[in-house]
Image (cartoon, rainbow, N blue to C red; front, side, top):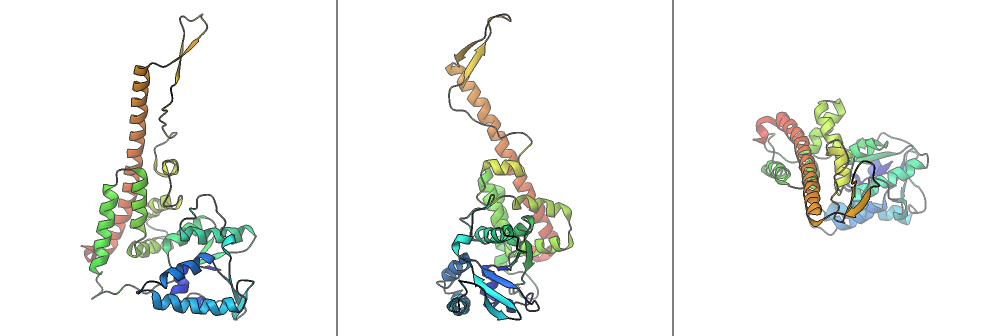
Length: 305
């Protein structure tokens, strides 16, 4: 079982997390990336205490040999710390993102024939793992503080501000990046988690699954596959093209370079086609997020007003 950063942060001894405490004979694996993330969290005032507590537990395990092999953590279970070399790049993963590095470790272990489960508090990472054939275990997190059951003002503000950014994006890559940020909100992830568990509503799940196919840094080609209209990606060829001419139906064709006027007209058509293609992608990304936004609004009702 590969354990992500948030699980270790919230439960420095992950085998004691509520969802895992009853399990026996588990081989826990901590990605090297988790250590780096905890080191970073330990430098921030608001997360310093818990991050240091987690690092202290891991330090004792490392001193006991956890980087060389599994160290016993009771009930037949072991824990080891993986090396950074085990986070092998995989197609569709962006190794600049820590979540993708942790998932890369899962896929590497899976290729070795191991039954791998990823324990995470993040629904987005959980869903991405499941789509890659890796089992997932969602670990509960403390609910955000609320007064009288109402959402905090900052949650409401973040929700509407994130949606506004999506609606204002004017390029496919920017729309996709902002959509990812909208989906990362804990409020949105909690409600999407409910939808996945019950398998309903299907239109929400279909919209969300589109965002699991490519990382946040996906380029136009990938976005075209997930959100673009049918057909190949339009290209703008800045090089001079050649024109084939026939003087009559019986003559041998003659090839010549296009004239400046022909080139200008061709580029105008190609650029227009590319722009239309990009606009279509932006609109599809926006409409997919709007489906999810409306689902959240229906679930929360007046609390989100």
